[in-house]
Image 1 (tube, one colour):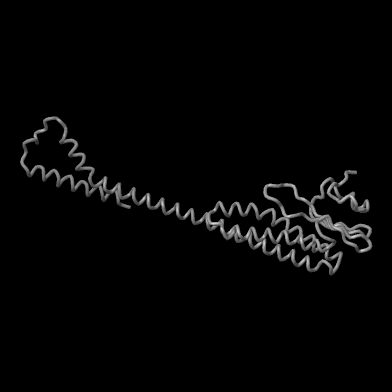
Image 2 (cartoon, one colour; image 1 turned 30 degrees about the vertical axis):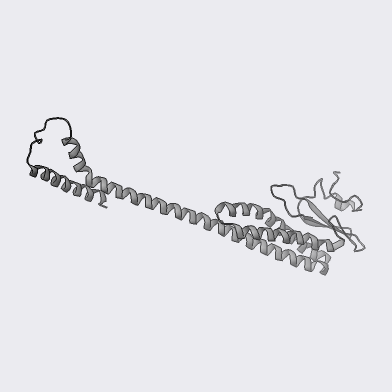
Length: 240
């Protein structure tokens, strides 16, 4: 049988319990066998760490509680839940400082493992309360409050991420609209001056075309014709 190395060596658990524990303690749960009760919980998840460190609370047939955490008996649950409360405060501060989508995304990465741990811890304490009795009611209630607060923080952070993404998309859409508008204006100007620019380019070539000594009115006529053509091209460009 594989021995669990996380259980304190001085604990005398029945074989019915130890055989249900592998080399690692696994998920959070309660195990009750032969008047022995073992509660398996997880400490606050650390960032970028897949392994979950376990905390054990063991009640022997005489009703005496032992724990692998700091503290004595069930009172150690206060310190255990306080660690989650401190993590909640840290996450709240990060939420208040989040501005852009990247901030909210990093925050959600931190909240997700804590949210799962608190959810499973809350369920485990509820199951334990049904077996142990009134001694665990206050701890169960604190766990449920933590669960509710973490859930609300996750929802708020998700909404913040969605809003930041939508705001960025709206800004990009406005920039594209302004770019299209500027391009349309440029096309209108080019269409207006294209005929006269083409005429000036042709008449400015170093070849004899017979207009070098023409009367002044000829120049005016050319400008007038090109202007009319420019207006026609402008109308064609802006036509829907």
